[in-house]
Length: 178
Image 1 (cartoon, helix red, strand yellow):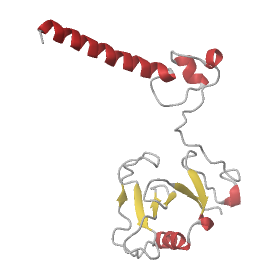
Image 2: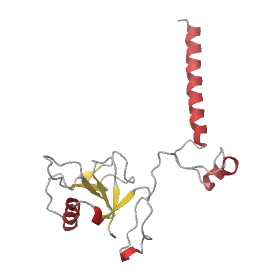
Image 3: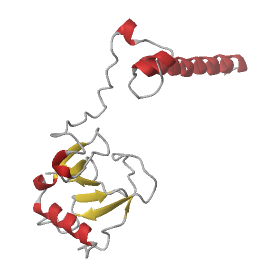
Image 4: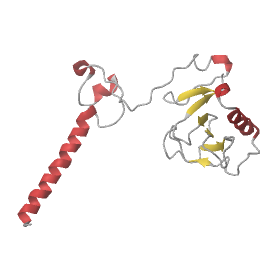
């Protein structure tokens, strides 16, 4: 290949990269994954709600669960979801073993597994982002399992509690009101 052909090949590759970048930026008008609001539409270039209609959230965005009763006043507990994008689950709807684990957490142990209470790193980013050491995980005993199983309760530094039955693939915030 001659140096002239290499130059044309490099130029063609650069044009492809630029075209992909422009396509990405134009796909939602902002280049980020946050849904456009009236405030961001006015401050950023791209299509506006007036010219293209309302901008819906991307299909991959989780849908928030609607609280059964207004937060902060329900049953006088003051429970407020930490992330409305996470589904919530009533404490009473959890398996008995999960409620047992929550009781152990409230008492400070003793826990059935030495790994209980270790820092949960949130590598999957399924929970709200916090500093390292904010979350801690606890095993929920799975009857018939020869190991720790897949069920966990994860607690946050502000007292919030999360339930996962599938080893961190999905989480529900535990609602203590019910």
